[in-house]
Length: 541
Image 1 (cartoon, rainbow, N blue to C red):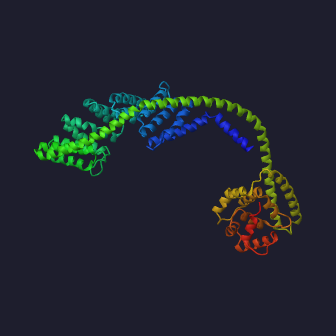
Image 2: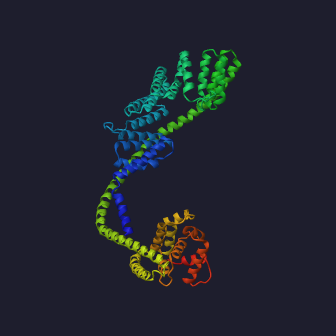
Image 3: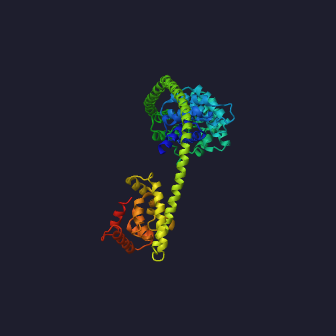
């Protein structure tokens, strides 16, 4: 019966693989991966691919949009920009913009990610197009911060396209929007790319104002006025501002601060350039030449780095066709597997219906037998408890004891017949004892006396699993009483003598007396204590 039910359960799992419960479970797991993505925790394409396959067959447009987006994020995080771009395009194809519940906020993220890839590939016109689409859908999705960030990113494209007027307009405009919606730090950060343009235009009052905002509100600076590591290029810009306003000591201070703190080639080059301009202005040709030569040397290293990145970019573009072919094959494979799965589901569904009819009667009969077994077990345990209690007062209740013993034997015979099919091998019984809830609960509180209900639970467990143990100890010829039986039960469950003393509220001396009495009366051994009794009891199953 167990094996048959297992087979049916597996068949049902396959046959009902597209239930609402399955969709909810898969969506919850996909949301978990999405949360990892938002927390910058790593995941792979292999983690996401099963959800792409599932939701392509069974999901809503929003489900498919999210799954393909996360697959693209996985590829991008592992340096597979072309594959990421393909996944993002697939995600856009999944979106239903005509639906009232379209996830516009998620759609905006897809466009923003594609714009970032185009930026990194040097395709600034394409970046602008997709950044504007990200902005549009972010507003539709009521994601204000994402919309403003997409708007701000347009300035990067204008900077690389050498369009300073557009760059300046975007940065100043988005800064005002950030402040309007309460994003003060973002408002300050967005002013960074205005500095060079404003310095070139000699709008120094505005530069000074924006720098004060940037330094006080961007959260990039510590209490000593030092900028975060990796942003030292700001010292070059501030030095240029002071150079153009003829505050030459301050200009030299910031050029040298960048030279000292910015260890990468770019900062070394820009700070040396700044110092060369400064010394040229104050007519120190030797110093100007020294820093010009150093700047030239650093520029070679900067170009070498850029060349390496350009080769990597071109290699990625070269691999794009190969990745597209891989993606096409994956889609074909998924389509074939889908057809096979649908056929299998149809067959399994028919088999399952037939199997359900076959096992239904078997299940009902088994349920009836189980109920009857539990009732008999309860009755036997009750009779056993009453018999043990009566034996503690044997002289007063001899006649009633005989009746209970007779009733116990009758009930035990019935239960033995039912138990035959449930008996396990000895190793399995020992394992069941060790893993039982009642044993684990007792072992955690051996200093506390057991309640009547806990003792009944122990006896019931032993009654159900150790018939030989019960039959021997409750035999008429030994007539052991309540305390004797409780000691034996706890010993058989693996409880030590001292702990049994605590659990039953009996002294160690009383426990020793019981052990001596039972060894002699049941096992015919005139020597020994708790250890010997436990050894004998552990042989009983």
